[in-house]
Length: 358
Ligand SMILES: *Cc1c(COP(=O)(O)O)cnc(C)c1O
Image 1 (cartoon, rainbow, N blue to C red):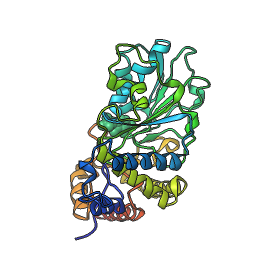
Image 2 (tube, rainbow, N blue to C red):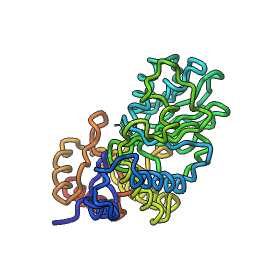
Image 3 (cartoon, rainbow, N blue to C red):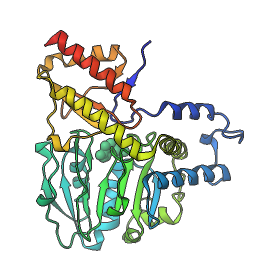
Image 4 (cartoon, rainbow, N blue to C red):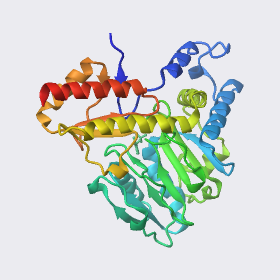
């Protein structure tokens, strides 16, 4: 059977080396006589796994010392509430940038907690606003944006400069895809199941001065302070997802870190966009300046061919290419763990399919 390449947007493909290591260690982690899944989160074995994962993530992302890293549950969707719950009380309002489906959800959730100013809305245009289009409310508690819209494939080509207002980023689908300057952010959060590890873990990287402002009524599980004080062990954390994500951080270190990931990711994306642009048979709706390195949506000029495209691609081992129902067509998610070869096999198939059907 030919090799399978999984282009799912999330849960998404994981590095094969990582899965093999997890397999080797599944029944007996480092001679502990038990699986990581069976360990107490407060035992010394798991504590060492947890600490190593955090240390490796800090190294890979160059996270400054005045940031806490929280290993939580609830997905990025819980952060849509947790961010305003913890931060909005500072001034009662926050600025949001709307670039697509995930921004919209974050905005809808924030409205439960205070005044939300949508300071730019380019969701209908498949692009991110330029810095000049952004004017911030002087009393915003924070500015929230989505650096990469996973569904539309729209990515900010820059980090917004918000001056003294803390910048909050939903990095679910773009974290670890390239080096970023963490010090430009107040909070970075991400569900793990795109570019980190398995579903069930949510990473929050938060500047320490933003911790501690939750109101009395804030549930303990939604309070950054409580999780930070407890080292993300206020309750049982998602231990296995934490462990597996730690293996991914180690894999990143062993494979050249984020500088190398950036070079490979940009190359994969450019090859795919070049293939789309070179033909009238395929199209991508996104402003070329704002095209995502991670999620590449594309449509066929004749959408009655969509199903045969997906069937034939699947038969070649190219899986999960169906686009999100809100955009239609196809979407190739090409996170860190998608080998370059997978993108090349996809491109070869696209050319062949075009030749046979144009
Ligand atoms: C997938 C995704 C989410 C939702 O993540 P969950 O972990 O399922 O809550 C939110 N934002 C972005 C940008 C995403 O890609």
